[in-house]
Amino acid sequence: MKINWNYIKGLFLLGLVVFLYGFAHHKHSGKKVTDINVEFKQGDNLFMNYEMVNKLLIQNGKSVKNEAKTVIDLQKLENNVRSHSMVENASVFLTVDGLLKTVIKQRTPIARVISNNRSYYIDKQAKKMPLSNNHSARVMLISGDINDNDIAQIYVLVSKILSDDFLKKQIIGGRKTANNEYVLSMRVGEQEIEIGEIENLDSKFKNLKAFFNKTMTDKTIDSYTSINLKYNNQVVCTKK
Image (cartoon, rainbow, N blue to C red; front, side):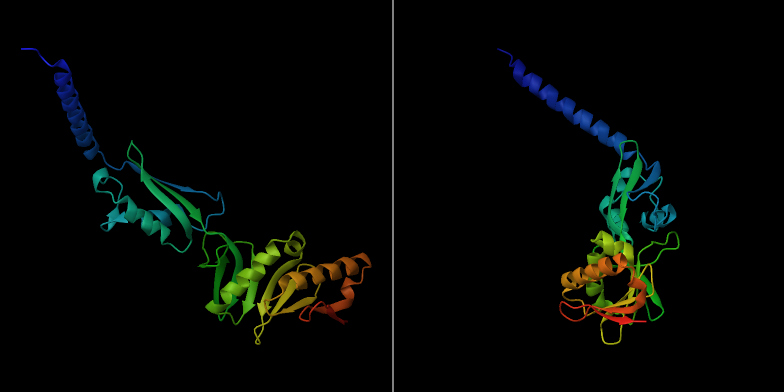
């Protein structure tokens, strides 16, 4: 009888694969989480600290360190970290040597709101972000009677200012008035800039820049106490 060596080789290779898989699975199941590593993408401006993140890496009421790798629910841990109000995105994974690594991208604030004894940030995604005990961001300050319905408009206003190099250097904050209009404050000088409602901002800021270029050139900028941009294609100023 002729022996089918290819058939025998196939059975041998299949048995070897099953053995190696079982051996690797047995070896892997015995490994534990050796340590926890947290990496922040934004460098030194840490609104969160490592202790805060470690408290989010909890499973069944305890730290996952020294737990078996096979019982770690990575998706659940990642969702815990992502749910934090200071986190924009996060990934959690295990390395082959048992290290649980967490990579976090924090939210980026663009403005700080102070209203009715409350204070919080608005981030670059137009979402509310709590203040941090670890780091204070140097961002534009917006005050007044502000509620959650105003966040979208404040985001539009601040984003427009930050996108312009000149305005970004000159405007440091603003306030919302009782009639839902906005007044901006300058870095240098005592002038208040009345922009009215959040509309036609491109035209209003174009007029503002033209006014500043003229008055800074002829050195008359300090002669004015207020600058009103509420009217179409006009800059109405109040002299001292």
